Amino acid sequence: MRHKVHGRRLNRDTGHRNALRRNMIADLLIFEKITTTEAKARTIRPAAEKMITLAKRGLAEGGGEPTTALHARRLAAARLPGKRTKEGEDGTFEDVDVVRKLFEEIAPRYANRPGGYTRMVKIGRRPGDNADMAVLMLVED
Image 1: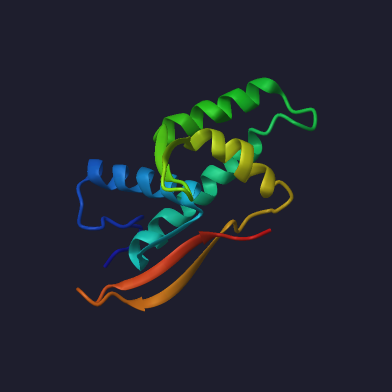
Image 2 (image 1 turned 90 degrees about the horizontal axis):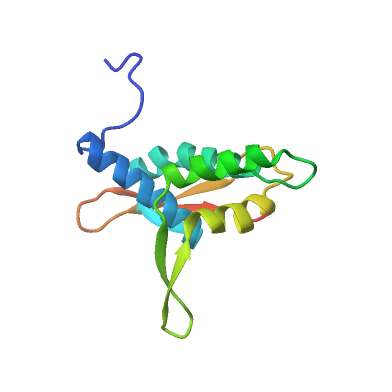
């Protein structure tokens, strides 16, 4: 029985599991929609929502204290990879700073929302290994 056992192992060791979580959260924040297995989506969803909440706390507007905003940015930078490469519409590749996008685009979008920033939609089973698949996306505001 799994009484009081928190989290999923995902058949990976600790370092691989942490790297997977960090990279998938970064991809969700950059692309705003990812397709993955249902188990991985259930694993990263709470962590992604906590990162958005951290970024909302770090917004320095509205008379907030600047040290709080700086501390939130440093925490986010420690928990997320630095850059991601994204392909543009014209086929060129550009480096996108994950923390900057989180604080300047995503957090202001959800400033008045109390939670529930992501949505998980089950899309059936993968043909190769019959794994349950899901799309994890940021909700529209």
